[in-house]
Amino acid sequence: MEFSLTDIISICDFSKKDIDIVLEKAAEFEKMPVEKKAGILNGKIVASLFFEPSTRTRLSFETAIQNLGGKVIGFADPAASSTSKGETLSDSIKIISGYADIIVMRHFIEGSARRASEVSKKPIINAGDGANQHPTQTLLDLYTIKKEFGKISGLKIGLLGDLKYGRTVHSLMYALAHYPNTEVFCISPESLRMQQEIIQDNSEKLKIFETRDLQEFLPELDLLYATRIQKERFADEFEYEQIKNVFILDKKILEKTKKSFRIMHPLPRVNEIKPELDSTSAALYFEQAKNGLPVRKAILSILKDVEK
Ligand code: CP
Image (cartoon, rainbow, N blue to C red; front, top):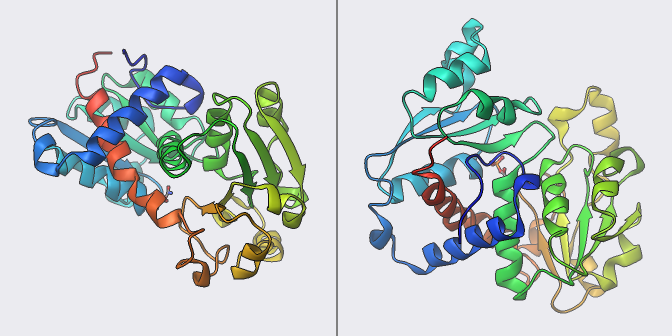
């Protein structure tokens, strides 16, 4: 099977076959002892450029690179780079693509990863661009769902919280459209509804419902994908304060859900999931974060020799 992409910018660029290749490779990496794959990135340098804060994405990529024998250059804080002196993103990427074999980049501007891919001689991996896309998160989400439920097609999946600014749910919605008979329940306050363009783009392939009431569909759901209200995307802090605790999941919700019901969250959480849920069988979010490692190893191994 051949992977069709030279950059990982948007999940919308992926065919079903591309997704399958990543998920199958990730399963291989998860089963293999670390030392068996240790040489895959030997002699390769990966630039890790984080213009926005990150714990999971940056550290799982950097762990994956080191486990595979590669070396990491880059920054976790753009203040330490020449961006702070006014260098444009395009110039930075042109220069860094002369040093590194792959560039992993998180940036606060929507479309920045696409722009970077246009000027880079080396593959760009979008580690999140503003409120737009987070494709590697989606690949690890799909991997987690498939591993837990044995399938993705036909599941009833609730997306909860900030569906307007949450890039993980935007990417996930497009990805789920590859899986027939999947039903998606968009549960959010009115002001944080899923963008209508995203709903329209996927409405032929997915059954999509919208509600403000978490209780309405709870007993039907196989999975609830909760998200943080994205404080950093609000122009008005007062508006954020008004809405920040709109959905808080606690053990009481389990009285209404199926036994096999699971909760995912890209993390970090703020108040959306009470710690009392962590020890229940519904909590899949820590396992989900752990799955970032084999999935990101798979992505790096696929892109390591790409010629653009
Ligand atoms: N899920 C996710 O993107 O987490 P970080 O912001 O910590 O990378």
